[in-house]
Image (cartoon, rainbow, N blue to C red; front, side, top):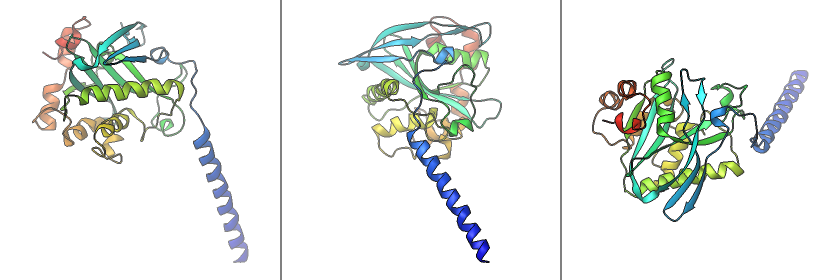
Length: 278
């Protein structure tokens, strides 16, 4: 019995030491700012504010043809008037192979016809592929991609053949659109100098958007909601909290706001974002 207790204490001591080492590593392990990044994640966007105007450098505007791996890189710089946001859109892409995980992002429509998408992603190197399990550990830095909406929507609908839903967002106050975009762009800038880790549960595409929503209305979305983790049903969570501008049920809304058929019909044209909403 004495030997058993002594062995048990040794095992417990080892576990405590391992836990201390893990916590120390977790706290002090910083994400890299440089790496051999995948091409579509290599050049970060930067926002420069001037009163109500914001100039975003390196707005991604890639084309993907004939396949997704055949990337044609392109970027542009553009100035947006934050007081001229016409509509905010919430985009949901459940991954068709499992209907559990998915990707979500936000798109901002301006009165002059511009559409700016902000997509929160795991920044991967060329020798990495995304892994849910690796995303729980310190594997991928967090990156905000500022992109032309045609870049991030068309590739998902027309090439990946995933279902894509583009929902209008219901704002409590009109000025919340400006506050939301400003908050996201400021975080995008901050990550360049002070990087953070992507995390499958607590810092993924959907949970990060929820944090920005809660920055506007504290406590609106619980950070422990399972739909922040199983992101294929993130649109259902958004509807539950009154974030989608529709009175339809989630099933009816998915039928109405699915853009796949329109995207296939419209194709890669400059007026893509306007056409898929007709």
